[in-house]
Length: 69
Image (tube, rainbow, N blue to C red; front, side, top):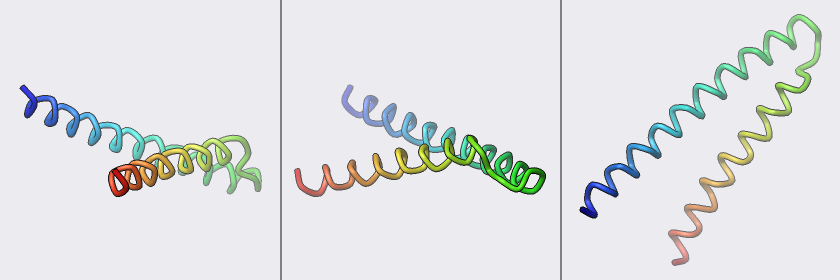
């Protein structure tokens, strides 16, 4: 039973990363389009930067948690 839980967790993690990449790429393209048309990134750029900081910060915290436990 434990093996299936680990496999399920691994698949869920991969899906979260794929979803985040899709979100980031689409938001980057939209922000780039806004920058070309208006000359500024606006709110989508702020959303992109905050979501990247949260995602990579959580990855780093997970690595540190595994390293020091």
